Image (cartoon, rainbow over the protein chains, first blue to last red):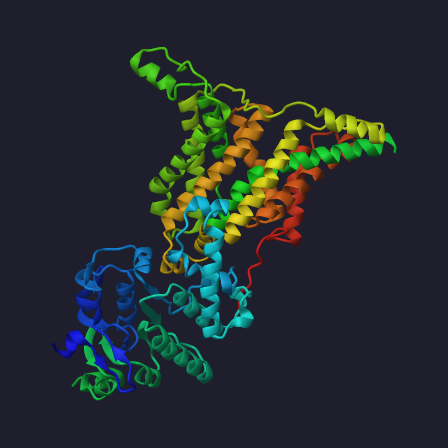
Length: 272
Length: 328
């Protein structure tokens, strides 16, 4: 067996498993606009996989394909060895893929705790009737889920804002709450769309630490889009580089950093 | 105590009871508005339709009898049986859930992500269609609704107050029942929306569609759920108002009474609907009592709106409505 199916060890001693998701020849068109052109790559179990590229490269579109918000025009998505048919976003969430958004999508009117609890909706089993009448397992189930949520709150160090309506929180904390909600679903795979955007250095450091810790502790596979190159190079195991909807690089950070196409895409190249 | 004061108290008490009836209608509006940001113009018609269906099932009426007769040349109107009230209510609830599913499939599904005004227009369309549909299905005549709720003046209250003040209050039994039902309904709905999984999903959908999808909530299921609940509340309102004043077209106009209640209580608050209803109920009865004789009466038709307008000036989000806080 080769390393492709077996996985590998990272320099810091984390074990990366086999392929969790494989994207084969993905093309995504909106009318005449081609957002993604024939891109293939894989995501391994337990890996931190970054997608980078200049603005408008199609990174967020790619993430939306993975999360099921978009169905690719051509190509196929394989998850845990099965091809995924066209799905509704809520069904993808039920498969164990959680995400955060570039421009934060939280429930502003609800408290931090309630926001995080919504993350566990797919895991709650009691039916409509028992929920409505608060009978049977419903009350007990609520307690159980609440306990798990409290753990996540501790993990992300947001105990003191538990009851605060999300709308009142500053930006950095909102990002953290969004991460907490995604984590609450106990996802197999976590998609982060620019988790550090608009943060100051200290907040970025915190967020980096959380991402590394949760990957380490829960073994969550992480796919992230990020503009801060320092962060990407530090965090990720492998990096996909996109430009104008095409893949121009794929590999470990060091390899990608020295790739001529990538340097051209980022620094610009004269067209003469 | 002077008679005049006692009389005013009786008027006030009656106002409170009337307020509860308004609140029952307002509740349906609040539920749908909270969960989807739609002002459901059809809520009043939903109550009419529920009441019509209930009477129809109860009396064993053949649905679409007029249409069937016109096409086939038969002369059928009734199946010849009557259905017990409790069973008829359950069956009507089933019809309301089916209606919610049809509304989601035919209308709402196609209007995802449209601005609220479009959805509002859609509910106006639904209101008028449903009104006509109810007529075709059950006939346009005025019907009597009797599900065994106590009617008439409560003698217990009359004799109790007579013993206390030497003046018997006239309170309708039905109003007392309506009050109890409303209290139970509000308590149940509040608990459901605050502490249950579906209730939380419902609030989540109301807040942000995209985020709701990402945590695995099916929007379609939630919409069917919320319209079913609104249908249920409409059924309760339909039973109360239908028992009080008969099932007829004017039942759908109670929605107009719910509007000032909503402005007062706030469009997003369930307790607000109740408190708003009570203030409007008491306000209009007392105003009629004190100012009516001076300006020639008939103040009940417009006083509620004046009260609501005054509120709008000072507290546009209503008493309990959410104040939108935006960080810039």
